[in-house]
Each structure stands twice: as structure tokens, then as C-alpha cells.
Length: 247
Image (tube, rainbow, N blue to C red; front, side, top):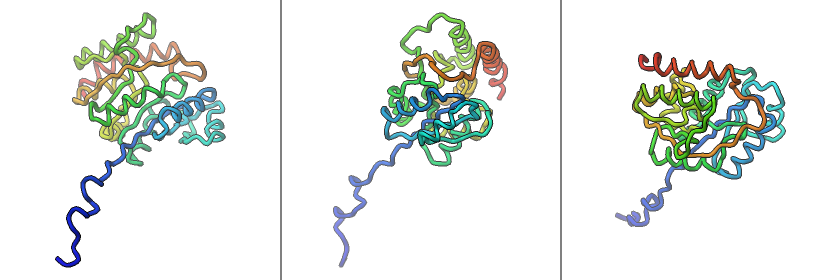
């Protein structure tokens, strides 16, 4: 036909179509992390310079907000402390609103190492799983301590419910697929906790662990003190064994 172009000159030739970028958001809940939050973000920038992050300041009482503002760090400020679950939920809402394909919970206290993020991101990108957990104990033995005893009991509870072994159920480094982001937003009771992992496995969601290394907390305030840790362990076991099976 007059004026028509040869097929091999069409601009939409398959060889010229670019793959849609895989968008990942790192969600960093922060409560009283003035001493570590800037270095945590800097470590992310060095290791994963092409990945977006969002610090969710969970009503910190120290100078965390001032550090975020003065350092021009990308953040969302919650005027009151609503806890880890609420802070992560706020980050997930942001991820969904901005069409991210993957959201990763990442501690703001410097314990998590950014160098291990590409591995769990790739697991979600390649559709190996729906939830990728950065675990300290996939290839390494769990040390003997009171805290690790609690972790082992929670692992046992998950196994009894799901017949699925999770070695590091309390790990705060977790990557969620787009579908899981949507599911957790639709069900606000699903927090970043071990009972949620058990529930997702019961829903036949694919949960896998990947070996990482973590440092000890140096500064800041943990969401859990000793008494709160005991209550947390008991609450998780009750939830996993007696509540989630009937949801």
C-alpha cells in the first residue's frame, strides 16, 4: 500500500520493547532511632542505590524526626506512636499507592545488612516465592539463649500448624510481593509478625527463607523489652495455635 512502512521498520518491533522496571520499596519503621537511622539509610544508598526507601517515623520522642529532616531523608512522619504493625502498614499503603512490585521491611537500628537485600528482591522478582524472609539460621545453627528459646518455640508452633519449617520467625527483614502487599492492606490485622507468616502459609502462599547476616543493635530503643518479649512470645504462640486455624 502507498505510504506503508516495511514490517521490519515498525518501531514496536519486539526487540525494542523494554521490560517494565521492577519497583521495590524498602520500608524502615523507626522509633527513637536518632543514633542509627542516618547510617542505616546511607548503607542502603551505597548497596542498593537504585531502590527507593521510606522511613516511617513512628512518633519518636527523641530527635529522629530532626535527623530525617536535616538529612533530607525520605520519610513519613506519624505524629503519635502506633507501634510496629501500624508503621509497617503505613509503609505498605504507600507502596500500593505508588504501584511498587515489592516491599521490604527493614530495621532502622542498623542490625540489618543492605548487602543481602538483592538476593531476597530477586526471589520476589523471579516469582520464587510470595514472601522472602532474610533468615539468620538457614545454614547456621541457632545459638542457645532465652531469646532464641522463644524463637524456637514460635518455630515449633508454626510447624505444628503448617508442617512448614521457619527457622527465623521473628526476623524483621521480609520482602513481600505485590499480591501480599494488597492482602495485608485488605487485612490490617496481618502485621509483620510470625503469626502472619503462619497464616499466609495456610493460605498456600509461598514463604521461603534466605540466609543473611545481622549485626547487634548498637543504639536506639527496641519495640520489645524483656517482659514485653515474654508476652510477645506467648501471644504469638496462642495466635498461631488457637486463633489462625479458625480464620
